[in-house]
Image 1 (cartoon, one colour):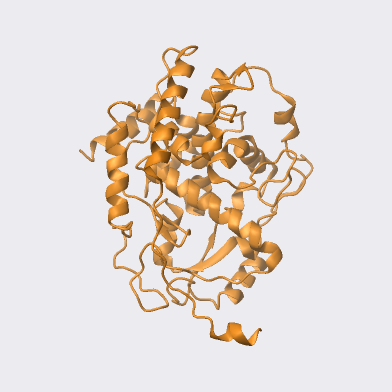
Image 2: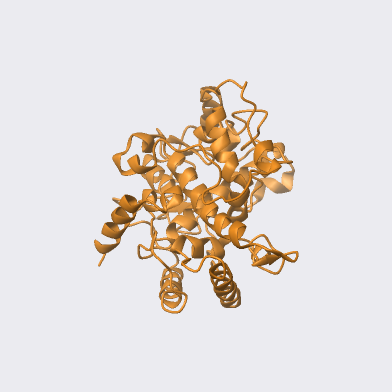
Length: 370
């Protein structure tokens, strides 16, 4: 260790930065209106859902600019079907991710409408199957990859077998990228089918095509079953972390927004109320989830709040993978929050956006808030 580094004082708190700038929001609103109008020229019954608006708010704005992946006309070609399908895919990717985030979800009756997941092409996909879809299919001869207990042990050893946030003993192991996203050929294919659009909101290299990576690799399962993908966390934090209530981007708590999951979004009447709620949450510095029985105390002895800084030491070669894993979790948690589904991510539309029974469930949940 460099002698001078022994006296470095590490900050325990950094004020959370604003989620969006006013100029950025106005640009995104304009793009959203253009996308709605454009898709309606071919699909006159199309109405954007809140999930579509959440996607437009989160993708890199370059994707919305002329010739971007979500631009109405890309390189001179009409883009109606692809654009509509991609917006649905981003929603489906997020719901797929949060379903797997907590291993108990598959046995939870609230998720019954989404289990088992269907192995199909991207939702709302129209037209012939192209080479990229076929190229994304996982090698069918790969064997299932078991959950790696040895890697969990490495995580516990690295974190001192205490929560990295509160310092409490007997922690749970939190996986940023869930173990079941890539542990079988079928699960890997389901993740791969949605990986491209998923990468648009996460900003992480989640693609399986042309760019193999530990998260979704058609030639190797379980690439993210590593200690760098895990943290020791207090059981009191585990549920909020796995249900869209908070995330690690300086442990940022998600905005508390009204339930709008599955709801048709009117750009004229619904935009400003959503912006007002985001501003109110930002003005309060993103308060912790009300579901906390009592506010956790951090290792520095202060109450946990958005902006608390957690330090984790990983080998240099693993840093970029950890950063990507954190990005994916944060983006999916924020998407869930923007739809008003924090704490109840099963209410995201996902692939069930056209299911009449599930739409009724969403309607009932929204009405209970009124």
